[in-house]
Amino acid sequence: MSEHGGKLVARTLKAAGIECIFTLSGGHIMPIYDGCLDEGIRVVDVRHEQTAALAADAWSRVRPGSIGVAAVTAGPGVTNAATGIANAWRANSPMLVIGGQGPFANLGKGSLQEMDHVSLLKPITKYAGACYETERIPEYIELAVRHAISGMPGPSYLEIPMDILIGAPRWDVNIPKLRTAPPVVCPEWNSVVQALRHLEKAERPMMMVGTSVKWSQAQGPLNAFLEKTDIPAYENGMGRGCIPRDSRHLFKVTRREAIETCDVIVLAGCVLDFRLAFGQTIPKEAKIIKLEMDNTLIGYNRSADAALVGNLSCGFEMMLQAMEEEHMRLDFSKYADQLREKEAAKRKEDETAGHSDETPIRAKRLCREIADFVQDDMIVIGDGGDIVASAAKVIPIPKNGFWLDPGPLGTLGVGAPFAIAAQLAHPDKRVLVVFGDGSFGFNGFEFDTAVRFNLPIVGVVGNDAMWGQMLRPQGALYGADRVVATELNSARYDEVVAALGGHGEYVTDPADIRPALERAFASGKPACVNVIIEQDRGYRGGSYI
Image (cartoon, rainbow, N blue to C red; front, top):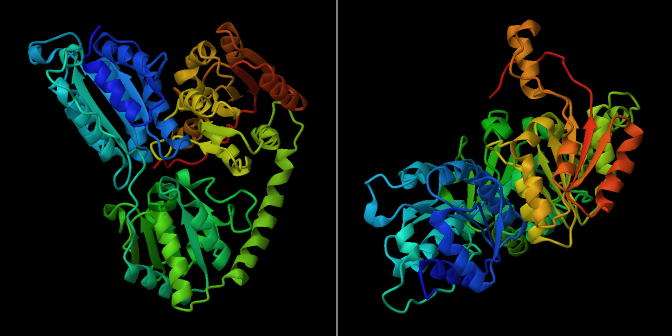
């Protein structure tokens, strides 16, 4: 077939360095596939459009400077993808979703799967629009990508009707050279000096390292600043892994105390949402220094005393420069040493449960076994409630790999989609997913996709046959006899994966966890290690905010 809109889509994506698109087959978007075959762009077809969007999100996370792309058909294809788009919106992941639509000539007539996708997605995207001229497809893709990567990044949605994709352009179309890395915008110098003046007066400062550090690729300057000042630092969101796991500047278990007693807090790309109690536990008299890519996030839930708006890599470099030019010496090693002593004591308290030989297997024992197994070139993904909360406390962030989790939307089911994208993006790394048994049920069938594309991802399911984070507060609020909709079967998820063509392991004894992990990784297949763990029915809690 001669030149058509689908080929323009593919040529534009190729010019942007796009290596693959995630999709589920649909008639509205078939011309895009035809173009991708011409351009050598890999078409990765999954089993649910939610997976396509989540995989595009993950691609952006594990390939900084690139952007994930999904293509979904109209109607239910777009609505299925909406959860993945919303997850990227809350996690600030830049990505592009291209959606199909009935023929432009028939809009409003009731075409198959016709609906107003753009209005649906506007609240959860940086950009949502439609292209109604074949010749303008590259222009609209560039517009959508620029929105996705500008300021605080996020998802963009572009709708292209079927007849626009099939149609031939009426004239030669220029393909733009697309930039998929965010532009570097530096903070104002006076704001940098102001921030340092607050730190000069501090006795108990701390830093929270968040998502914008990752998107600014600010790891180098961040760690240089920590080395220069010895300010205690904690990680949050996609900031996890930005500080090497063996760095003496990285703190974990004393975060609450550090926040409640700080006199200066540096929020480096970290928003004061529910994960930080909306800023309510920061002392009223404490000074807040905010480094953020987007000015609209300054003062989010608490006013900032100093604001460095721009690329965080540039921000940290400017602070180091200002310290030298202003002859400032910031040394918080004495306070950091006090926190290190408390960190060591708290870690010692948690060691007993991690070595328990009890059966059913204790969740902390499973997490400790996983932590001991993780290597520095792995990509580790958390997809679940209880088990991931426990795992995140002990599993080290691989130095040369990544830690991925849903982010603040708390979307369950990200595990397999994230793992597929991560393995495609980094075929030289091993990918490990920590699943809850509930979360596995969302997209576990994507192990079929992993089998078809020969992606040797490994999932470990902490199987307690219940939605534990819901069951306990439900029982506490309404009584043990009113527990409902929170219990599951202790299913053989390992057999499901084996039936799809992968490798399965079933574990009931703590001594068998490590051998099962080793066999799963050695199999060279997509694998599931199904571990039966204890049920925690201690009814407690009652607040879910």
